[in-house]
Image (cartoon, rainbow, N blue to C red):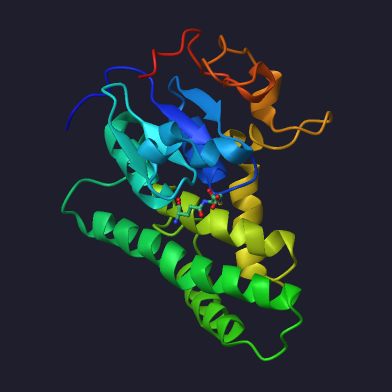
Length: 238
Ligand SMILES: N[C@@H](CCC(=O)N[C@@H](CS)C(=O)NCC(=O)O)C(=O)O
């Protein structure tokens, strides 16, 4: 397994799928750098070079490699930091379970949930997406019955992915039929690493309250927070 040779940089927007990667980075506890991508910046040539659709999150590794898709980023980060113990050994049955729940998070939970939320905002009452999300919620509630985390006592990257989707549902009170899922979300939000992401009394995410790195060229200083763990000098951008 290659060792990380320097801190990764996360290109992110607050209150988006970027937050699950930030949470994982806080679970890992190693240095990282942050660059907020705002507004028109998403469709800039520089950002389209990182993500062909101009979206976030994107992770840039120290060697310049970029990765998009939050699930792929989380799996890669977990692999790059074995000491954090967020992913079981390659080829093990538990590893297969992690893949299973990570894929489940994006395909069976997130996709219908987002469709259902959109339909609700449009006033749709009969919703195939709601039915599909319900089936998935029943399945994961059953898997969590009597367990703190999807692999039992062990918290993994699969929990970051599934809990982050369910947090979005819970904040809209959509998990009421599944008290076990509400409790799972509460457990996930009680983790110290997650608590570090919660909004501060001044209204911005926790990453705002900490040491700030020098400004990345081309970015507004106010939009370039750096984490608790961040190093002070951003790498040069091409
Ligand atoms: N499947 C992707 C979804 C990425 C995505 O849609 N990101 C949204 C924020 S949650 C975004 O960048 N939206 C801005 C845009 O589409 O311009 C992932 O999980 O990373």
